[in-house]
Image (cartoon, rainbow, N blue to C red; front, side, top):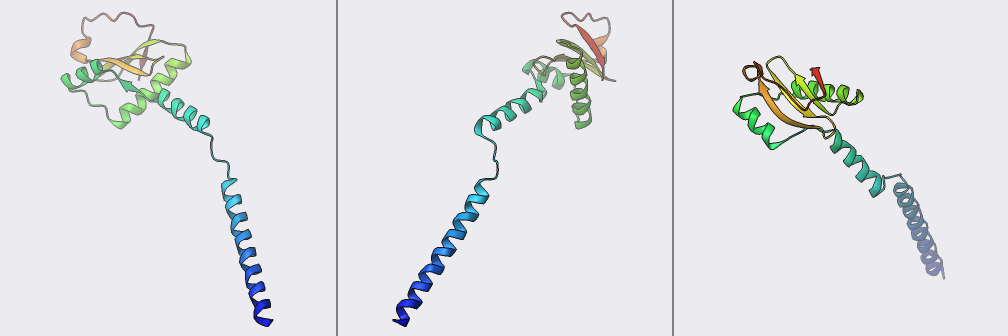
Length: 132
């Protein structure tokens, strides 16, 4: 009889422990994780803000030996943001030693021109210029 009571107490203790574990799991899963839709919208938003380079721009950067350092990328992102605020679509971004033509609406660098290429050149199909 005593063994039976001890066995019952042990089973109750195990049930209580199981319930506590279940409650802890429920608490941890109630942490508001973003839904798939929220996660996807966040990633799409981040991708929209990321500056991309067209294959043509990449070729021009390489052939003209223009290096895109983290500092220049930061300046470019700031310049694109300013142009976007003003409603620009296609912008000439002017740096010290080179310039870029950027599709602001698509966050895409279209082409790159070094200072030598800037001389006596006419830029068409742009609606703004930013000194970056």
